[in-house]
Image (tube, rainbow, N blue to C red):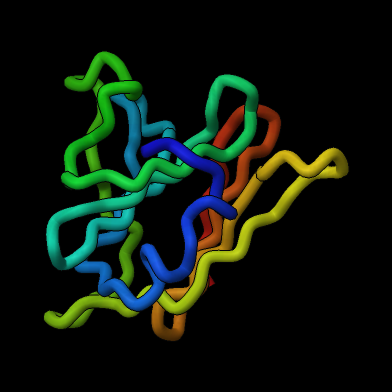
Length: 129
């Protein structure tokens, strides 16, 4: 299911526990997506779409999505969060919109951290607080 962040109801991912939080990088090390993998091996991917908005893809697996092509040129790299054995709790997802209402970013609260993902000029920007 592909949707915008406001379509990812906190009841869908809120309360889930993340066992991995990855940045998906291309062969040159450029970040192309944020992927949160849950304890049940499902995941959610945040990436910049063709219209430069932020796309959110709730997936039943933890694989790199096939729209990041060719697949062999992409890898998952940890963003460096210390994740306990029972995972990090997803507390909330808040979207950021531009002046015409297009979703351009999201803040994902996970335990004591906030992972922010933004589309800026067609590129993705990630930060962890």
